[in-house]
Image (cartoon, rainbow, N blue to C red; front, side, top):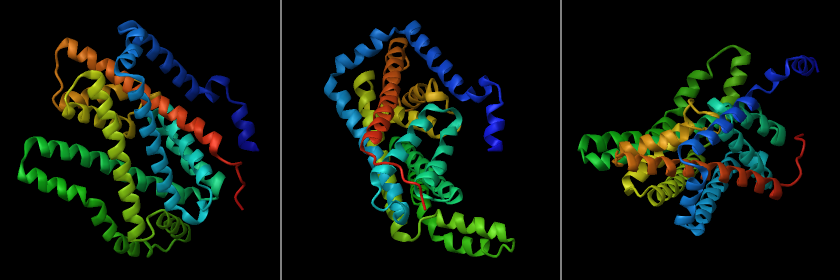
Length: 321
């Protein structure tokens, strides 16, 4: 109660600072697009590509959200048993906040939502989220490394890629030894925290393989969809589309993330596409810039639709016992 009273005494602008920053960024973004290209031209690209393509891309992106939910459902089988729809809502709200809030601050919502909905401790949910984000980063960097190795066809590069590709399995194999050392900590509070962190790790080899496998499938589908969209909209090669999709997603999982990904996501797409061989002429860059913005709008739209659907299909919230 004391904390709530102190929070309410803060100036209005401080209490709503994050929302205001997000709104200002959105307004500036909308104005910038209108000034450079015009919204009619941006939206017109989808009319050329066809409504069927946009609908298919949205459907496939929504499927990746179901995969993400299953990954967490399998990660917390005891707490989430029989509550897939409610968990889907948690995952979608977390995803939407992650997309819209700056500097990855939306990540904080996951442990709070898991605590509220399923009674999972903050420490354990945070540890699980960290593991999942490491899986996500690994999948993206492994995909980028595969593209580079395929382009340069160098044996040593392939060996380095293979070592990195299997590094999660190596780390999991060393887990028991590291945890054994950590259990020697004598301080009771630290021991309790380590126990919670340990529970946030995959329980056994099969659960690790499932979490890792679903992560790889999830990112393969998402990168393939975004690469396909960029190839169609920007008239670029498959390699450049693949690079653009990777660049956009890497910009979204790293800390330097603007509100809603505004500016950073399209910039990541452009940088990635150029790194993988997209043309650098003025007309090609203009076309790529428009395609990058449309791809970004597709991501935002899928997040909003996913969150809306999750509210419709989820049951009533339950207070954990």
